[in-house]
Length: 187
Image (cartoon, rainbow, N blue to C red; front, side):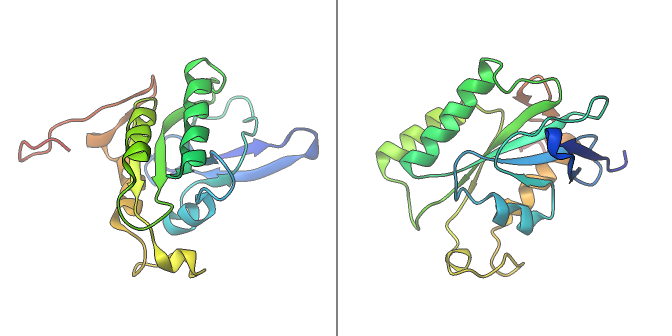
């Protein structure tokens, strides 16, 4: 499959930006910020995939579905915003024919382990998404350095790979399909 770009429209304001699809994907990719400062711009820059948006834009009729990744920080406010979006998606508030919720990207808001209440909340909220990726805290990003191979965690590259690898295919009905790799271990 070739990459497909989907143009989105911004209502009366005219045509919006293009949302490039990951290589080999049949859908465009949209990074949706659950709240301000979630890390969408940094993740989009780090992966080079998708469109950086903080709100949903209507997709022009007849275009391929848009895979939507919700991005949130792991502080209480970020987790609660991600929870609200999961609830909206489950109640069809985001379940539009052109949008498919592909997963949640949780970006650490501080170094180290999450406090127990936040760890439990993040686990609960992750259950509302087909997939969850956890990006560790990156001091270089906090200090304003752009993403680079030397400061970008491997999990960030894995997000794009997971969206296009057949062994990690996204079922657009809302479930992640996990298959066995050739050596028999779950991926």
